[in-house]
Image 1 (cartoon, protein in one colour):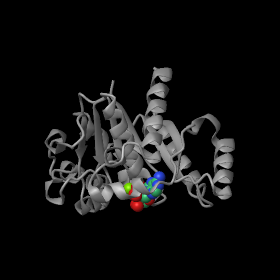
Image 2 (cartoon, rainbow, N blue to C red):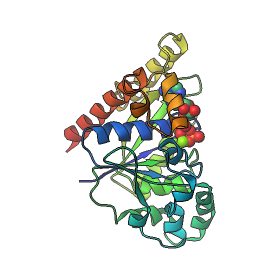
Image 3 (cartoon, rainbow, N blue to C red):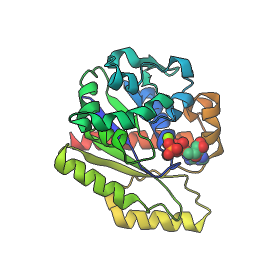
Image 4 (tube, protein in one colour):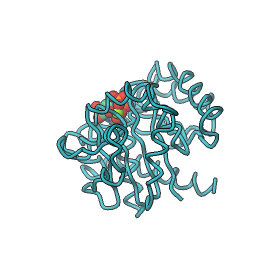
Length: 256
Ligand SMILES: Nc1ncnc2c1ncn2[C@@H]1O[C@H](COP(=O)(O)OP(=O)(O)OP(=O)(O)O)[C@@H](O)[C@H]1O
Ligand SMILES: [Mg+2]
């Protein structure tokens, strides 16, 4: 069974890419076969995994535009068991081109039909609720939503929840909320604790027990083209992502 998870939140800089890279790496470390699809024209997941700009073709853009095959785009990373389909700024054009497509919401679903041999597929979504994100959600089993634990955390979340509901009603009945993840948590900061309490009260069991601490090693790792788990395996951030991976595996076992 392949599980496709969109890591999504239209708010920028909340930890989508960091979560995609480090959760995927944690799952690969326990022998799961994992694919990351970079669906963000910023290409941060590709950069963070050390994929050179020139070798990111074919990305999802070429698969949409030139009907290139998904399998041609799958690249191995330095982590055994973790592959990626890269992205670069060309992908920004897809947002416009997709608008003229027939059944445009299902474009990713059709491209992803070719995916096999993976246990988990993570789609790193861009910070927008445009057609790239909608396509990702229509093609996914679930959505994992990182929330930065700060004052504006819940702003915009209702728009995301409405979009997810609309997709469930109109395009993809099986879409679930995989979980809400609190990121960049600073336990010494009382505001951070208040936000956590608020989010847990609101979303109850949907919120992961694991929270990701604000951790300097996590922010340094991408500039070395490595996941935090490789850059510093024992830092607080890496350990938190390993805990998160356990919850994600357990979650799936409970549901299946
Ligand atoms: N737990 C953390 N501790 C410290 N820094 C973090 C943590 N998580 C993410 N960051 C840093 O915060 C910034 C934003 O993170 P990230 O790129 O993962 O967010 P994003 O939601 O993918 O952003 P975008 O919306 O632009 O795609 C990055 O510089 C990243 O290194
Ligand atoms: Mg990102």
